Amino acid sequence: MFYEDIPNGKNYFDEDGHLIQAHGGQIQWMSYFDINSKSVVSKWIWVGEDKTSGAHGGIRAYSSEDLRNWKSEGIIMRNIDKREDFDNDIYFKKLYFDKSSEELDHIYECINSTTAIIERPKLIYNKKNEQYVLWFHADGPTRESKSSYAAASAGVAVSKSPFGPYKFVDRYRLNICPDDQKDYYPQSKGMARDMNLFVDDDDSAYIIYSSEENLTLYISKLNDDYTYLSETVDKAVYGRDYIRLFPGAQREAPAMFKRNGKYYLITSGCTGWAPNQARYYITDNIMGNWKNMGDPCIGDTSHTTFDSQSTCVFNASNNKRIERYIYLGDRWNSNKLSESSYLFLDIEFMEDDSLKIFYQERGLVDGN
Ligand code: GAL
Image 1 (cartoon, rainbow, N blue to C red):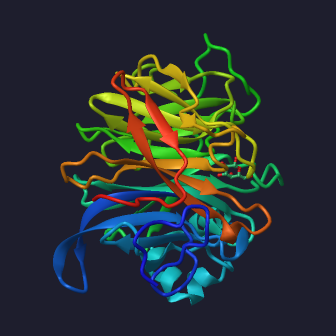
Image 2: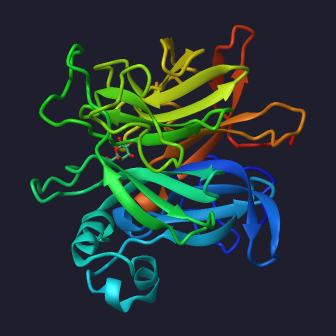
């Protein structure tokens, strides 16, 4: 099977003929050291949730040279089936040999394949440490609550290769509403669910996520290693280390990108796997005021973002002259999540920097 373009909203297979499992994911152009050819190669990399076995399939990656035909690079972060696998399975044994028994209990709670929920993985490269850093929505029951989305945390894992194996570092609650602002969910502080990452031109990295029981989006700055916040929660300064966006507006599925010095954030509403109306925001300053620009979709009569939910926007021009930004959305199939499909839609920019997204039956049909 060779693809000349993308079958939007239809079954989409990798080079081995398997349905692509990269839901809630992210695509980017990356250069990395390839162990097979022992040289630096540049390719498109797509990371996302593998939903083959439901909610606990781990994180998978794909690579591509043409953005249309994808080779599976396998599961880059595995969920662990049994606590004993830390002793019996060489994969986990090698990764976590330096951990104490208590630490292993905690890691097991965070990445086990029965209750732990790992969603919306996003990958960035840290030049300083030459390390690949994967962040994701890390959820599941906790010792205090049996609810399946109780942890509401952001998880982080690191690797020397983009394709893993990634070593889980920890999962964290993040920044909290300052005392002089209205907290929409004061009973549980620092929650983090749907998330994304953004690295600016000066290499500062940010995590963008739904907090306050998904009622308020936050943007928090990461530290130089990209493995934690720029400042511990108790010392974080509002407006410098983090901001709250649109308190109470209930937005999720944040997809942030930059073009011509402006930052864009496409979001969805919060209706689980059911699609809803997109809304986007623009600013000149990440920690400044974001302007609500409304729904970017044109001709979307059902107001469901063409039956999709945002997961990322990537620059597909790949250093070629023609500018091309692609909206990547998930068309969730709630009856069978593994059969959820994808939408690749070109974004059109207007003179005034506003944007428009039209439906396209096939994605990436022409051009670069
Ligand atoms: C959606 C969210 C997904 C997943 C789902 C679970 O709102 O965007 O990533 O968490 O809810 O119901």
